[in-house]
Length: 249
Image (cartoon, rainbow, N blue to C red):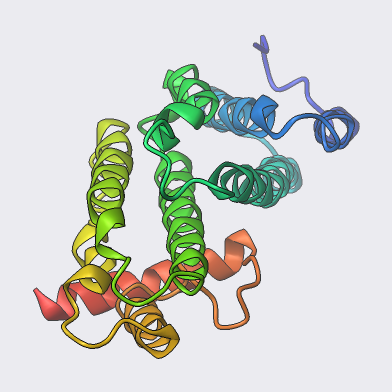
């Protein structure tokens, strides 16, 4: 990419501005475009290239800090754009999802999986693992919230018919995340299916108790205010979740 360390601060500032401009241009486009994935992949390439150049030519300290800071800024900005777009896509797909047999949630998210598969240079990086953990939180969190909302609209005794669909959805979702890397992600299927195994009278209170239990078991997946979390908030919640799961194993 470069023949030497002929890179100055203005070059990196220009690249950062171009990356932000690209994301802003696509902000109003269809959520399925997801250009953020490609920007994140480019960040991985830039970071690796800079490390290789730094080993061959020792840069001045100020330039090294500037380059690393610029890459990190672009990466953070891209992640903070990607997660709300995926959240909005999930919310759109989950409207009217439950009770319809022809709804393939994993297939409907195909653009996301294809985008990730199209960036193989990112797959072995810490960035990829952080992104996948955040996406796991967003996708399953929106699924649980949508399921809870739907169950509250049903009469007692009519929930059981959804069990097969929910079991299929959650299995396919976890399988697709597992396919994209051994990330040590806990499968939330058992906790989700718990709502159908309750012997109590099915009511709004039952849903609320189940949702609270799921929130305790998987911190960060469903917020108390049902508001989207930033990527930094998700990382903190996932770290707590990881510690919790290790203690319980």
